[in-house]
Length: 164
Image (cartoon, rainbow, N blue to C red):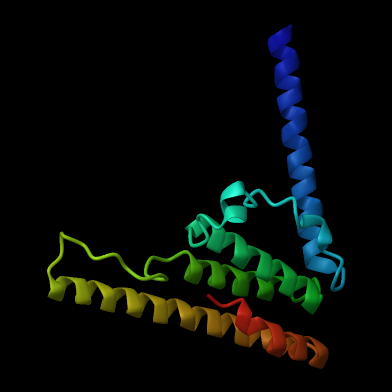
């Protein structure tokens, strides 16, 4: 009986998470203006004691959290319409692809590589970054074409801070 009750609670928790995720996605996709997204601030899972004390400020999780927040804020500021949502998603995915790649930070010297191998590796990472940056540019160009003049002004003012 206790196992059945635990499974029921787990199923209910999973359903609540799924429903709340849908509501969050709908809120982000359709509306709310600047200042309407305050509910996520302060309740972020990445607001750990380490980030408050200054430790771990350059960790990938912290960097990802900052990019996530910037993308979320920009989407709200732009008031992305349902019609623009697929274009926004392609742009956002391209930014995530760029941000999540190795080589976005300074590399540590490796004892495994000689100088030539190290530079070749860095060149490959730079080419990969250029390819991913082009994907961001292409996705943004299509999104930008669909924007209203007001949205374009907002993007012009705020988008540079989002690109890693």
